[in-house]
Length: 412
Ligand code: PLP
Image (cartoon, rainbow, N blue to C red; front, side, top):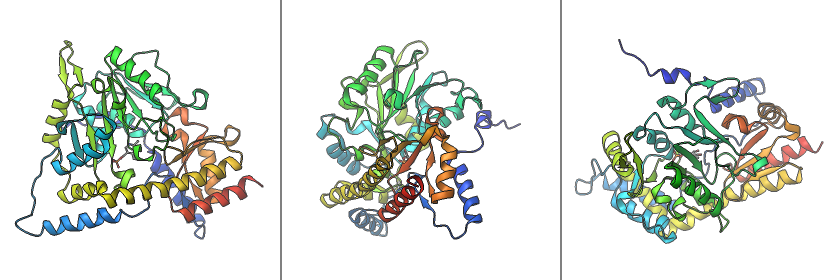
């Protein structure tokens, strides 16, 4: 008799974005003439930079010739890409990362989800709340989350660290000791960041308590303030306690092209139950080479072009485009009297709903009255209740139009 992984049966039915899609579909069926502006899902809308496209075409042509055709490549990524990542993203910040500490992959969603393969189910997991849902759901699938409690919207075995306006979105060290801590900065969904000394508190805590930090830096390219760290390894000692996830998705428009990388320093160790030290780099290498066959050659050539002279200029234009939208959203909402966060070092604006209106009610209000779709904060965790996320990934004209509609709605 084939038995299922019953942890999957504990997952609550309606994933956030499917519930949003259901409500939007229902609305558009009833109102076929309404033009809906989508500021909900965090997907990019601009095409790939020209340098990336050129490189992709060239690589496709290489695949057509026997002399340059590529079959299976190194699972960890081609050295041409790993070298460019290290030379451009990492070592200019003094991080001194080695080639065999970088693993190229098909996405940070996969990597943040799969990393649990090399970690015991007995680990106590902590997440900041609100949180990118993948961290919690993948731990639930692995049996590390306990049971989902409808009443609180929390998993019984996960430690939730609230990040709200009350603590200025700075997570406090937990009373109970976790073994694994997920940190995402710049943060999805709140768009907030930690300064160096605030991140240092967590690195020091992990060093003293033998914790592992899983640091998701998917939005690193959006950092504009000089005192915000781009990598957790800018903090002394972090290589002993942290894995960092980076992605080309939001940096260079690769959400549909798929390329990312994960850094696992060789200094980083976790433990067996007997207390013996084990290098996580070795375990991930074993996992990656066994379960993954590498990112396609053509995609890695496309990612390499992100670091060319033209590629760098085009990527920064892309980031500027979205951050101009973020500025439009920020300034418009501030003028309307909203309490808002984020949007300076991240393409997300996190707003407090007026009069503590529940997130889903605010979602329905915006959909019904302004035909604008955002994401209810509570969908990211219980501490997101009373908040709402708007993204800057839309087209500029649509962003301006959405803000005009909100002005009409709220300045009445
Ligand atoms: N991490 C965070 C915090 C995200 O918000 C996202 C995508 O929205 C991802 C990772 C996924 O990145 P990728 O496209 O590389 O899988």
